Image 1 (cartoon, rainbow, N blue to C red):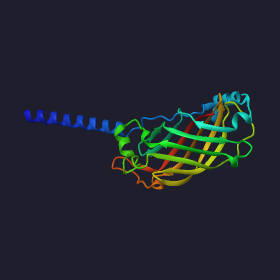
Image 2: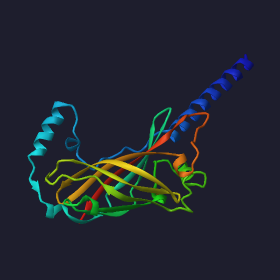
Image 3: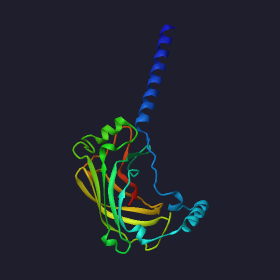
Image 4: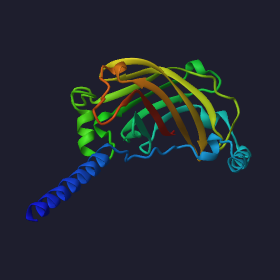
Length: 238
């Protein structure tokens, strides 16, 4: 009887330990960061009737003049850059709020526009300190050796001559993304909105681990896709 009791207790302890270990693993691997777009949902457009009504309302916004848009804009401290990794379980987001840079706008001549941004990689955060320390280490981003990542725009798509307050316009940014000292030509498919005296820019591009000299972090627990999404959520002020 005592042997059965001891065996039962041992089994309970093992099961409890397994459940605890699974919960700890689940918490360490899970996503803790939600992406926050700087562009209001009604400006991005959806297929729902409600969004369509909101878009119609936004389209009645005041006209924005070239004088209001043209000139030098600086990335405000409310801006963020996101890096997203998709595993066999879910997509895990990393956010970096330490972003600086400029965008020189010229509606009459897109070829004369310039733009650049710098991200302090030590500020990268997934909401899990142990995971962040590993990602910033020598095996991946090597933040101590390469503390900054940059994006320099080589060309912008043509911007419309007429803007309305609060209404999104498409803009494509082609340029060079530099991570770990390695350059990669990328294109950010983006939207821009002028509202309340500020410019908001939301754009995404896809890269791979191999693009920047990193190995795919496959494990016995999770498979990881090779693609990484980089997302700009920028607020700019004159």
